[in-house]
Length: 356
Image 1: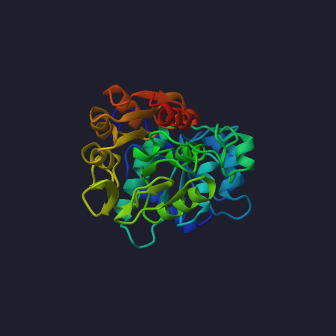
Image 2: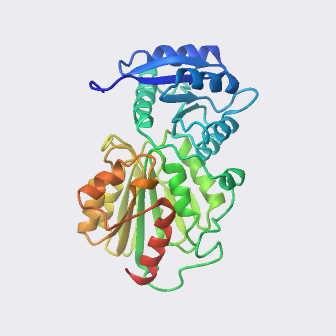
C-alpha cells in the first residue's frame, strides 16, 4: 500500500491484555504497519511515547486512573500525536474527539467480522499518519458544551430574517476530523438556518449519538434522519450510518431518502451520492459545503452542484485535519470559495443574506 515509504509506527494503548493482544496481532498482518509497543495506562503510554516515538497511537477511551479524554488533554499540547480511538459505543468518544483525537473505530461487538474491523482500523491509521493534529484551545477544552460560540455574529437568539433562506437547501459533507469541524460550523449558525443535510463518515451506531450531541450544542434542531424526512428550515439532518442518503423533490417539498445501497467513493453514506442527488433534484437555491477528510468523496458531486448553479464552500488547507476531500474539490473547480473552519459559517450567512 505504501511501497516507497517506511512503515507506520503504532503504539497500542489499552488496559485490557486481551484487547492489546488482539490489536497487536491483527495490525501485524499489514506490511505497512509496525506495532512498536503497547501501554497499559496513560502514565505508561506517556513514557513510551517519549521513548518509542510512534507515528500514530490507538487509544481506549475508558481506562483506569487517567481516562483517555484527560490523557489527550494533557498529552497533545506537548506531543501532537495522531490518535485513533478504539472504543465501544459511547458518547465519550465525542468528548475524546473534542480533546484532539483524529478519528475512531468501534470495538468489535460481534456484528462485524474481524477482517472488516482491522481493514477499517488500518485505513484510519494510514490517514492519521498524514493528519494535522490541532490540540483544542484551553478555553474550548474547559467548556466543550457551550451552546453557541461567542464568536458567532448572531448568537443563539439571532436569525437570518427574510431573504432567500426559505428557498435554500444546504448539503455538508465531511470525514476525518469532521465531527468537530462540523460542530464548529453549526454552532455558529442561527436557529432559522435553511434545511441542512449532513453526511459524516462514521461507524454504525454513532450517527444518532452524534446528532443528539449537536442538537444540545447548536441553535437549530439536529437529529439523525429517517427515510422520508422532510428537509425544512431550522432542521439539520444527519445521514444515518450504513445507508445512502439522497434528496428527493416532491413538488415544492424536499425529503431525504435513506436506503441501503452499494458503497460509492468507498463510503455509505457517500457525500458524492448526497451532492449528486441535490444537483439533479433541487430546483430552488442550494449550497454545498465540503470539509476535512481523506480521499475524494464529495468532490465530483460538488462539481455537479456548482454546474447546476449552487454556491459551494470548501474548507481551506490550513484548518483541515486532512486536506483530501476539499483539496480535490478545489483542484477540479468545484469550489466557489474557500474558508477556514471558523469562517465557513460567516461566509454562508453572508451568502444567504446577500446572495454574494
